[in-house]
Length: 128
Image (cartoon, rainbow, N blue to C red):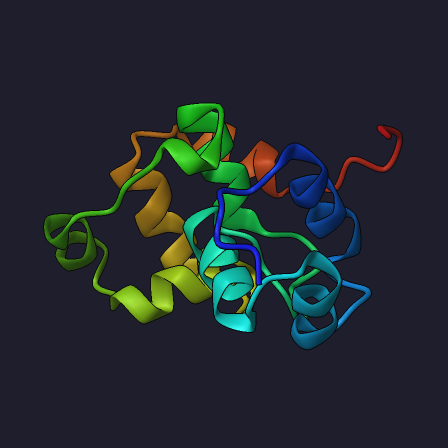
């Protein structure tokens, strides 16, 4: 097994095949343990498995921070929104859909105007 740090070609392979191969196959082809692959994916907030079609939380975070990875939730954040850590990360990774009430709480917490929040929810049919 490779005990070193992740090489750029390994990261590219993981990004290219994350939805196509199982965790065991990814680990075998990379020459790393399943745990190493899983932990790398966790640290870099990569998602494997079924996800929602449009991740509205990610879109709100992009409006506020530019890159959603820049946001680090705190205990006060969870208390203000009224959700658990598990629920937040399920929403962040798109494993669960965001409710309308949660969407409004997130928009209010991030000081995103209702107009910006509404625009983020709209479908962009003519944009690629």
